[in-house]
Amino acid sequence: MRNPWLALEAGADAAQRAGALRRAHETFLTGGTVDAPVREVVADSWRRCAGARLAPESMAGVEVDDAGLALRRERHPLARAMPLFRELLGTIADDGAHLLSVCDERGTMLWVEGHPQVLRRAERMNFVPGSQWAERASGTNAPGTALAVDHAVQIFAAEHYCRPVQAWTCAAAPVHDPRTGRVVGAVDLTGGDHLASPHSLALVQATARAAEARLAALGPGPDDAGTPPDGGLLAVLGRDEARLHRPGAGSLRLGRRHSEILLLLAAHPDGLTGEALARELYGERDVNPVTLRAELSRLRQLLGPLLASRPYRLRHRPYTDYDAVGEALAADDPAAALDAYTGPLLPASEAPGVVRLRRLLENRLRRHLLSGAEPGLLERWLCTAGAEDDLEVWEALHGLRPSARTAARVRELSALYGLAPGAVGTARRA
Picture 1 (tube, rainbow, N blue to C red):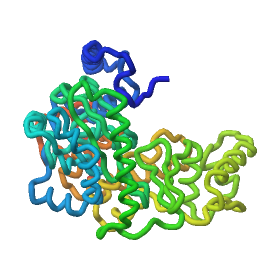
Picture 2: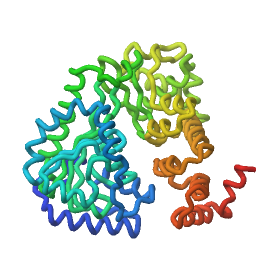
Picture 3: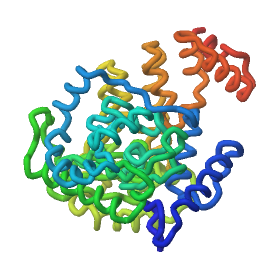
Picture 4: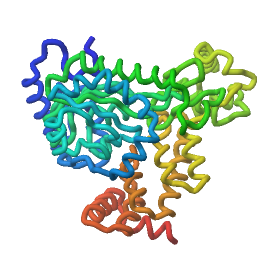
C-alpha cells in the first residue's frame, strides 16, 4: 500500500508527476474538483485554503521584526533542540541544495538556515525567519500542513497551493512537548524535486523524534508552566480524533467515538449515568444499551483505572485545549483565546453533547471578538476552519477597516443568505 504522506511512490517520474499536478491544481482552482494524482492529504489542504479565501498568488507575510524574532527564539522550547537539528540536518542544509527550517506551533518561521545562495532564492518567496507559513497564510506547504494534520508530510511541486512556492519541494514533521504531547513546532527540509524521496521524510521524522527525546532528557525549560495534571492533557480542537497525553504513559490517539466519550466525561466531572451519556452521544436515537457498554469497555482497556463507573466518570479529569480557550476568555484576553483555538471542537462529531459544547465555545469566542472590535483578531477568526462565511464578522471588519475585498465579501455573503448588506450587524446592535 502506498504511503499517503510520501509525495512520490517508488519509480514515479518526477517531471511527469509535476505536470499532472499543475493541471490538477488548475482544475481545482477553476472548478473546485480534485483529480488524480492529488493525494487526499493535499486535496484536504487545498479545500482548507480555498475555504479561507486564500489567493493562489499569495506569498507568506513577514509578521515578526528582528527584535521580536530574537525574543521568540529565546523563549521557544525548540531553541534547546536547535543544536540537535543542526547536528542531524545541518550538513544537508549546507550542501547548496537544501534549507533547514524550524517554525513554532503557529507556523511562524524561527530559524531558516542553509547555503547563502539557496537562502537568497528562498527570500523571493519570503521563506525567511519571522515569516508566517501556517496554511491559512501561505497555503499548502510541508511545515504548515504538518502542523495542521499533526503528522510528518512531504509536499511536492504543484501540490503547494500558492504558485510562488511550486518550484520547491519540502518535507516536515511536527515536534511535540514530551511532557504534554502538545505540538510546539515543526522541523522542515526544503529543496528541489530530488527531495521527494522516502529518505527525506524518514529523516525529518527521525529528527523530530530525536528532538522530543532530547527535550525529555533536558527536563522542563525556564518558561515551562509546571507538569501536566494527573488526568493528562486532552487535545480536542481542530481534530476529528482526540489525542490524550498522560504523564509517564505518552500520547494516545483515540477513535472518534472514544474521543466523544472522553470529552463528554471531562465536561461533566461529577459523572454521567449510562442513560445520560447515551443522550449526549446519540440524542433521541434508539440505541441498544449494550452498544454503549461495549464502547466503554473498549475505552477502559485503553485508559485503565482513569475511567470509573456508577456513574461513568474520570477519576482524574484531563485538562483540555477547550479549557485553555475558556480560561483566556474569562480573563478577557481574546488574543490568547485565538492562540489556543486551533479549530472547531471535534468538527466531524454529530453527537448532541459535543455539538452543544462546540457551539457554546464558538459563540463565546466570536462574541468577545465582536465586542473587542480589533480588526487583526477578526481577520484571524475568519481564517479559522468554519468561520470563513461568518457574515457578521465580515460586516464588523468592513466597518473597522473598509476595503474593496471586505465590501465584496459582505455583498457575496448577504446575497447568499438573502439579506441586505449590514442587516446582521444592525440587528445585533438593536
